[in-house]
Amino acid sequence: MSAVKLASIFFSMILVNNYVLVKFLGICPFLGVSKKLDSAFGMSCAVVFVMVLATSVTWPLQQLLDANGLGYLQTIVFILVIAVLVQLVEIILKKYMPPLYSSLGVYLPLITTNCAVLGVTILNIDNGYNFIESIVCAAGAGFGFMLAMVLFSGVRKRVEEANPPKCFEGLPITLVAAAITSLSFMGFGGIIENIFGTV
Image 1 (tube, rainbow, N blue to C red):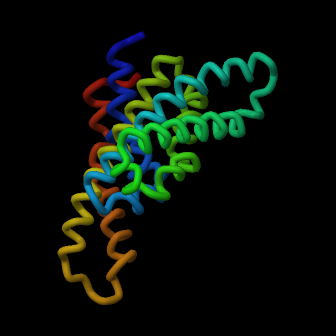
Image 2: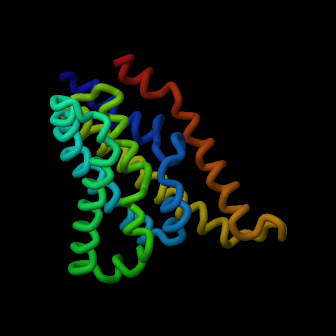
């Protein structure tokens, strides 16, 4: 297994194939929790943890399902695994980090239905990644989610200080800011391939 391939997978998931800004998965927490930097960072850490742990559990489970001809149960099994892991994160945060737990509010349980977490587990299988590549891909996707959240948190702070036209106040200006942030990631298109080569 090539370290160059792993680096290519990791950095492409952060910059080129960012789950939030390029694939548009996980938009609900992206828009809901990005108002404050601390809650955005806390949510991102929880998502990174859940993505990596979910991938490390679901990849072997998929092999087991395929070996027994039960591959069609993939989505149901993956959602159950993710739900259990999110409950674990929720219990840990409630016990050891109550301020972060209360600031995340309803968005913490929403990780269960965050399509980015389910998406990374399923796309790892669809891309034919082995176990290590899947973990690296999940970590890259998680850090890409974190990058998007932290960047957009700064953008939203600037937007709140701005004075947009009346028709753009609130959600419309937030969506326009999200679209412009997303466009900025299009510039990374050929960089990963040029640096690491085609893998």
